[in-house]
Length: 70
Image 1 (cartoon, rainbow, N blue to C red):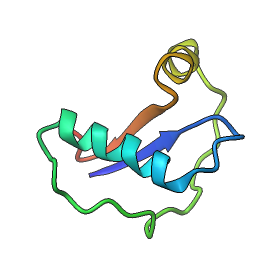
Image 2 (tube, rainbow, N blue to C red):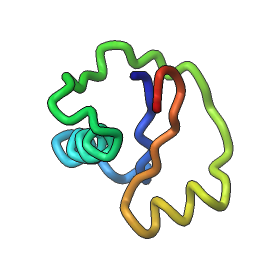
Image 3 (cartoon, rainbow, N blue to C red):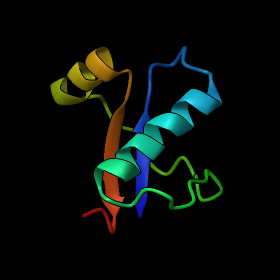
């Protein structure tokens, strides 16, 4: 699975950000999968949508599903 975890610019706690990713994997019945940032290439930049902003305000993050997300 390939997905991005969007967080506010001032969120620098890597452990917390990885927890967001693990929560997402669990929500997709993929708990236990290895989560890594090794593939991160900063491959896109986009303006946050209202949906993204609302999720970040509510949960602290937003997941951008990219490849193989069920």
